[in-house]
Length: 317
Image 1 (cartoon, rainbow, N blue to C red):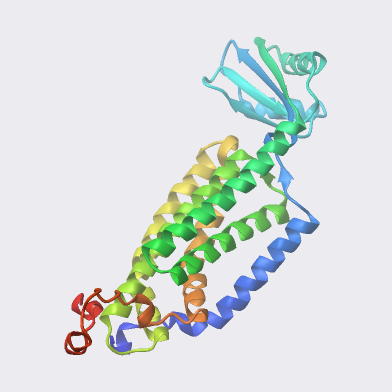
Image 2: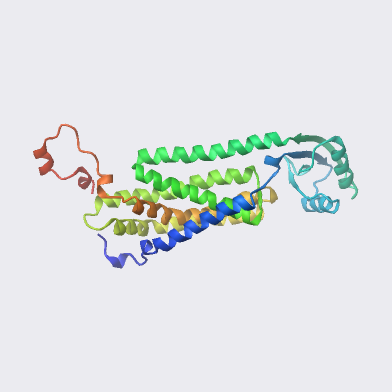
């Protein structure tokens, strides 16, 4: 095993504290989801979509101010295909009268605009989206379990899926706590978080498997700790550069994708933590051993040959 001098930080020494923290965060998130619930956006609750075309590109902030002063509360404003086309999505039930009212409000400043279309999405469509989105997340987790179980070993599959569920639940809990709008862009962010966290977890898992086969001495605790130590630089660099992009996207990308970037930022931080502690903790709890990762002996080999020849996993060193 590597010298302790090469391990300046004992990651596994904090695994009990990390376990308590993770359990507390997950329980708190589930409680928040049950008590406060998610602030579902119009993608899920239904509403009216009104599209306008301006003679000159308008200021979206001014449009939001006009709608707020007119008494409208739940709405979103964004460009749609061009700077002169504005799409306004509102929680109110859609009808021709609502579209006329909004047109009148926006025309008070003297801006030249034309009502292009007005559409209403009922709550039934939103209910179907909620069911389909939940099913999509469950299928994604199931596919991950099957893939990692086949690619590595079943214990690694469990140790990969638990962190993914941990990450998604905590992100949902944060959105429930602050009542940030949960729409389809946030749902897309959750699926992206699953992919990002899985990639990071597999990198750590691959190094753990490699070290279990390579290191002749050392307890599972020491081997896992060494594996995390060897991959931590890569993990921090990847997470850091991703966060820089997401921060820029949050501040410069506009209101339409603010929650998407926000969910991803939370997910990257939580996912980096879970790939180090939650996944490794699960392997320790399930009692991962060298025997779990040994390559099965070839069929037809005699007992004498098996005694004389070292295990195949040692030959891969």
